[in-house]
Length: 206
Image (tube, rainbow, N blue to C red; front, side, top):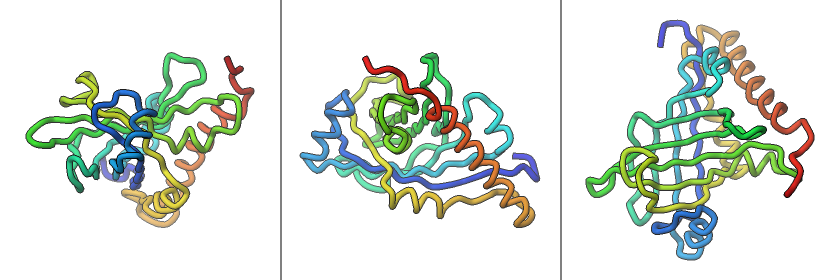
């Protein structure tokens, strides 16, 4: 990061039912809730260069953090090369992704937690669920090409969203003016992407 480059950091916690031995996130979420196996992803997101982040198509940042999952333990540290993308385009018209991926180790084995929020204007009021629901799979190995060994769905509740907002920090701001500008630029980017995704006719239901 070069001196004077404005950036943003924030913390986000998502929690939900998760089950080992499942590959379907919906089924893994149901079984996890029934069996009491709840996974929490405590994500620390860093956007080192806010201007570049907003202008690049993939809108990529850096993800670190830790994982709580009783079958493996709590406070499991993630590796430093996690992946974060916000409103990243796909080859499907109208579909953008919020990507959260974090590798970690357990019992000397590598695992890779890969989650994504699917942002698109389907029929109905789905903005809240799209932007707070992380469809998640756990891969064995150091990336998501490895076999799936668990799955579930993590969510961000209203209380978690308030906590997220309270953790937003601006890096390299010299004064309150630069801090306010950075937060304003990030807010306009976020709301602009939402408007582009949802303020248009919904895709017809099949």
